[in-house]
Structure formats: structure tokens, C-alpha cells
Amino acid sequence: MIPVEWGYLQAESHFRVEENDMTVTGIFTALIIGLIIGVLGRLVLPGKQSIPIWLTIVVGIVAAFLGTALARGVGVASTPGVDWIEILFQVGLAAVGVALVSGAYGRRGVHR
Image 1 (cartoon, rainbow, N blue to C red):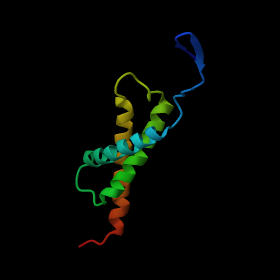
Image 2: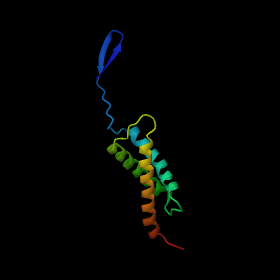
Image 3: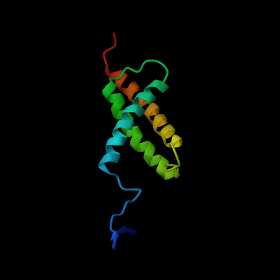
Image 4: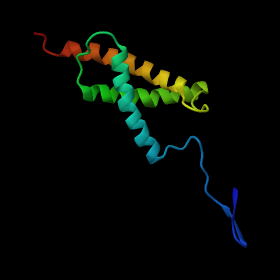
């Protein structure tokens, strides 16, 4: 507990912040990062991917969550400054996801 002082009164804060708790802000941040990660994953791949942008966004969001889980599992999720290793995990997983989805989605489409 963290002691808090207000003039003559002294109280203890009962708020706990745990690193593993997922907050609403954290979820929205992950979704926005997922959008960016999906686009970066698509840009990393050579050639044209024949999937719609909404599917790229979904792949990016999933890759952002999986990349964060992988970084936590490896122990590199919380580093001082920018978490470059976590971002590399996320972009790499997004590239793999876009490649897999592009291959599966491209086979379903009509070829002219």
C-alpha cells in the first residue's frame, strides 16, 4: 500500500495496479496498434496481397495480441523505452498471418 498524506491526515491507498491487468485503455491501444501492425505486416511482404483491408486489420489485431503474449512469455514485454522486440514479434506474426490469409483468401476469389 502506498501512504498518502493530506496535511494532518494520513491515509493509505487501497488501489492496486498489477502489470498483468488488461484495462479498457489497454484494449483500445492494442486495437489501434493492431491496425498499424496489420498494415506494417502487409507492407513487409513482397508482391500484391489480394485481401481486403478489413481482413488485414483483423490479422493485425490478432498479431498484436499474440505478439504481446509471446513477448510476455519470453520475458521481453516490459523494457525501458520502446519495446522494439515486442513490435518485431507483432509485425512478424502479422506478416505470417497476412501471407496465410492471402493464400487462403486468394484461392476462394474469382480469377479473371
